[in-house]
Image 1 (cartoon, rainbow, N blue to C red):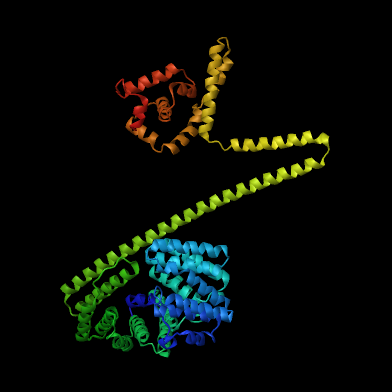
Image 2 (cartoon, rainbow, N blue to C red):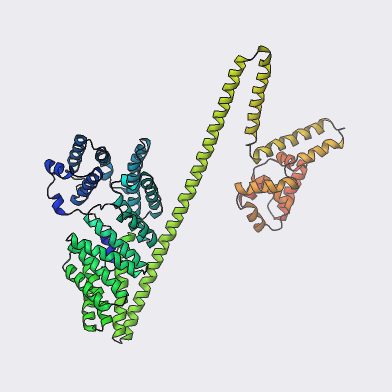
Amino acid sequence: MQPTITFKFLFSFLFFHLFLFACCRAQDLETLLTPLSPPGRVRFVCGYIELKNIVNTPRFEPFLRQVKFFAEKEKDALLLSEAEYLINGIPIFKEQNSYTKIELIKKSQETYQRKNDLLHVGDCLVAMGQIQFASEQYAPAFENLLAAAEIFKKLGYAQVPKIGKYLHDFALDYFFFREYEKAILYMKESIKLPKYNDNLDIQRYNTLGMSYLKLNELDSAHRYLDMAYKKAGGYRDSLWMGLSAGNIGEVLYLKGKYQKALGYFLEDYRINSNSDFPDLQQNAALNLSKNYIRLGSLDNAFYYLQLTRQLLPRTKTSTFGNQQLLELARLNYYEVGYRYYLARNDYRTSLLYADSLHHAEKIRDQKYNTLQVEMASGQLALLQSKMMLQKKELAHEQQRRMRNMIILSLVVLFLLSALIFRNRQVLLRARLERAAHHLKLSELKLNDFAAQVQEKSKLVADLKEQLEKNPGTDNSLLQQLQQATILTDSDWVQFKMLFEQVHSGFLHRLREKYPEISPAEIRYLTLAKLRFSTREMAAALGVSTQSIRTNWYRIRKKLNLPETFNSEELVATI
């Protein structure tokens, strides 16, 4: 059987046999639940809700109250916890908007996190992940599903009643993204555990077989698909007997055992020819067509090829999983059509099918690659966000510890001050003052480069003022003035790095637009960009205000700017 059919049923609701749920009045529920273990009771209740599809119906809340009453009566803490979890989740079930639903689940998760109820924290993560996966938010979906998997592993699978279903869901999500090795790992964990229900018991072996089939490990694929076929027979599930028979036929077909494959393909078609699902009929017919081509029975091959064409899905969907089904159905049809007309020596028609096949494969691969890139980008963004959050949490924790240490130190010092002699109080006070002084120095070290620029600029202004008041001052004061400038060659590199961070690309655009501008004029324009006054520029560059005016005059002449044009207007155009 092709994955087209498998996907649809792997994502369908999980069923218990109808004889287990023929009726569920109070006395019947008690009769059915009593002999089961606590985990078995949880699986039974969840399976009943899925089978009967009673969520958001008038039957849902009374049923949950009935389950809660039974759990309280039997003092079954696990079942009681699950009943309360479902009752608390009723507003979530009723919400139709997926984003609002996820926000409600997050709040529920936080509640269980505070209660240290890791089991239901994991349940919430799975619920969010599956909603996100269905909404094509694949990166956050996998993030939540993997977080849930870690929680369940930590708790121990024996403590998670629905773990068989969860592991199966994890495997299917990886299967959709062609990560078949990971799908196999999760599914092999699942088959070690008690079955969730009959339907899932068949599906997990079928999924294992299909994963190995995708990896072209045909012997392993045949082994697990045969197990699925036998389990379907044991459960008298004719639908899954047909599906698994078709899958076994596919393995035999790939092995070149066409006559044996024909028997399984015929069984699949016999069971599914009257199915309510056209894609089941389509897939079964297509398998027969391609097998008859290999056996040389071209008339039979043509009959089933025409039947396939009539059943081929024509609707489109934006959902990744369902779209895969439609695309794969068309791909298989084009491939078999190409082989049939090639066998008929009708090369013209064969080439038309080959062209359609190539075009469909190109579209499929483009969509798949785009989704893979989007998921990888999303995962990277999530990782970066998580790292930033961890960094902030670490910084907050360090600050908290520092505050605690300071507080503790002050308390210790205060207690010591009450015990020592009076003549040592002065010394203690001095130590406290030094501690406060060191703390203040630590805060000052956090000042950025802009604060240093302002401090040096003020120093330049003060020195100039001193020069004006003391004209007889010697040259050493002038040397101090030069050393205090903030845009010397040694300072320019650091200043330029900071400036580029604040005004990204400004210097590059300036040089590109006005290549004739000199390095000194570039420095002038960077200060103009920062809205420095003429006096502040002079102080910063260690020159006179007249030099600053002359600098602007030269720039204006060099760039042919009108006299009314000022430096602020110039930098605004860059």
